[in-house]
Image (cartoon, rainbow, N blue to C red):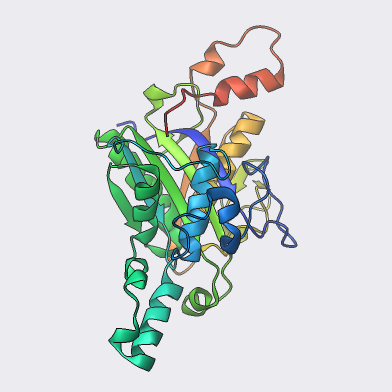
Amino acid sequence: MDTGCAVTSAVLYLPEADAPGCRLPAGTGGGPAPRADRAHELLGRKGLSTKDAATRLALCAVHRALDRPDGGPRPTGPPDTRTAVVVSSGLGNVAAVTAIARSAREGGRRQVSPLQAPNASSNVIAATLAIRYRWGGPNLMVCSGATGGLDALETASLLLRTGRADRVVLVGAESGEQEAAYVLGGPLRAVAACVLLCRPADAPAAPRTGQVLTPGSLPLGGPGELVAGPPEAVSPTAHPLAEGLFGTGHGADGVLALAAAARQVRHDCRSALAVCGSAEAGWRACTVTPYGAGRKRLRVGQSAADRVEQRWTAPEVPS
């Protein structure tokens, strides 16, 4: 059974991308990435005042993946019931839950504002995306820890394969807030990524994901192979993508790795491997290939740039 998905857009949203030691792949998608407290610069101010940091970062990543104008109007009209949302975030709303618990402990339940209640749901990120962009298809949140990003890709592939959706908006986001880092027990970066997926038949010239697998052993990657993932998972002979980025984004790492791999495949026209996980949680991996009819239609004498664009271009899907 074909378990692959076509990648029609891939964006890494990295508000701390100037951090020392972080070497990014070929483009991240869009321009500068404002922090969560400045998300209004991309999204406008309406509807953001009560949103937590991870939700704001996820909104920004999706905004860039859809190539919407900064500060433009929100979509209107009936919901698109054929677009699904799948989000991976292990600690996205921990700070909001902590704030509610602190208010209740210090002043009683009457001190908890009704406006805080939606942020207490672990599904708040996925629900907010669907409401803002008018998507009425399946709406799922994956909170499976360090492997969550590629677990979410597996879920997205299932939705497409079974006909539950024609397009899946796959997102990974973590807030990087102090409370979330405390729960994790280590450093946590404020990051987000968005990958738009559809069935390969609907975008035959787009890069394509392979099956999500549990590797039998580490490290991964043969000589010169492109690998996006935590350093302990990457073979010394492989070519690591976005060094310094992975291993600190927890539930977002897998989507970050997938987006980095997809963008590099677009740039290099050769396969790349996306990896996420940890020694405690286990590991997941999948391959991204420059798959599609675009390669079969190449004309003699086409430039490398022409070949890259033809392999990447996919039919536009209304947002």
